[in-house]
Image 1 (cartoon, one colour):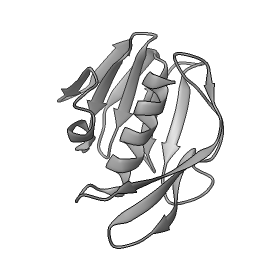
Image 2 (cartoon, rainbow, N blue to C red):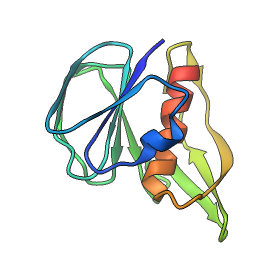
Image 3 (spheres, rainbow, N blue to C red):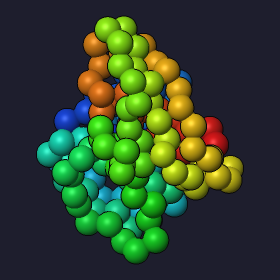
Amino acid sequence: MGIIIICGECECFKQLEKYPAVKICGKAEVNCGSAVIIAGKNADFAVNSALAVIVDEGVSGELSRGVQLITCGVSPKNTVSITSRTDEKITLSLNRSIKTQRGVVEPLEKPVLKENFSEFDLMAAFCAKLLIDG
């Protein structure tokens, strides 16, 4: 089983209570092939190896060649985006295949309750769960 490492401005750990997750203050330096890194705004990270790095639009850090980068944002050009919104729900979209611990997950959509989380928090938690659960 992998671990989720959260850095930067992100509150998605509240949605990941059933998963092994840690929140890092300061620079996250990661060298763990089964780790999923969630990098919110103002994240500072250097990743040598990891299963994937999930980033908010506009966030950047040091990333070694071969580490899967997953972008989250409102554009369909992002790996994870939003296809519809209501007052209570949003529909999250995985726009392209991602490599997980158990294989590959193909594009899909999933409606989720907003529950006062930011859109990035919802997208990042959705993606992290897919990566860990495969």
